[in-house]
Amino acid sequence: MATATLTIDLNALAENWRALDAASNSGVETAAVVKANGYGLGAGRVARVLAQAGARRFFVAVAEEAAAVREALGPGPEICVFSGHMSGDTDMIHDLHLTPMLNSIDQMLRHVEALPGHPFGVQLDTGMNRLGMEPAEWAALRDIALAQNIRLIMSHLACADEPDHPMNTYQQRVFVEMTEGCNVPRSLSATGGILLGPDYHFDVTRPGIGMYGGLPFEQAKPVAHIALPVIQIREVEPGETVGYGNTWTATAPARIATVAAGYADGIHRAMGPKTSLYAGETPCPIRGRISMDLIGVDVTHLDEDPKELSLLNHVQTVDVLADNAGTIGYEILTSLGARYRRRYTSS
Image 1 (tube, one colour):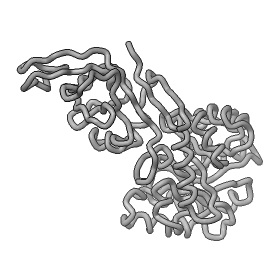
Image 2: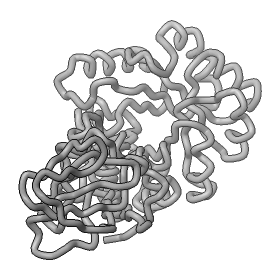
Image 3: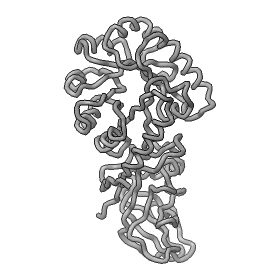
Image 4: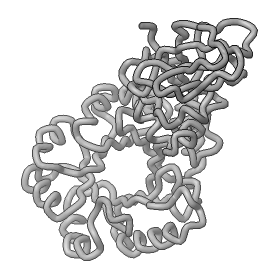
């Protein structure tokens, strides 16, 4: 079967990071989040380009993700692990020179006993109730932590995509209260927090989705592009149906192209009714259900039979597709399957 192509624009990625770096307050370090295999785009390639752009601190979700990043970056840049120091992580944290963001008393004990003197960070819970030490826990450990090789104190905003949400000011205030007088670099903001303004920037910002072309960074340049090859085009007569379940019936003569991709490639079935593929600037609506490997597309109105059609582009962005599927841009990017032929460009 012909293979769909996922094109990653590395220049756009670097420009988005630079723009978010410029949006961060003067003197603030701009890091980069490359978890989930660089948001589905290839952690090693992504990290290398961002390092060339100026990033010197990177974040991954779990220690295992750091291997590809360290291999790409070499020994210099710092790689922080959001999940902290989990049981079984000690050798990897030591060998790859990782900085775990410790989330609990148990993780602190594990880290200082297994790797005394090894750098670490601390994650605080300021109200999201997901990861991090709660205020009482941090109060009990604070003096001990500050006497060790602590590199960063961070927390995470729950509602940064909604600038007027009261949770933002609440978490910012709690973070200040928990970290005042620590004399350690602090980090509260991912992409949304950067856009909230200087009060949220502290010492280190850590953009993620905005670098990859997603909201809430509206000025982001598209990074990922998907082209789907046409396998076959057929004439469909009025009254005939397309795809599983007979969900679309032709009311007039139509030409239906079958393209090589489907939900096994991260193209969610739910996006089908609202989504088109594109021949240049011309939208071509999906007809019938998105199946595992194939999608039917109406090309009746085109002057020429296309060899491929575009799903993800400058018009139909990750967030448009996400809205069509009832999800978020993060899920669209990180769901992109392994079957794509990946092509890296520097446009």
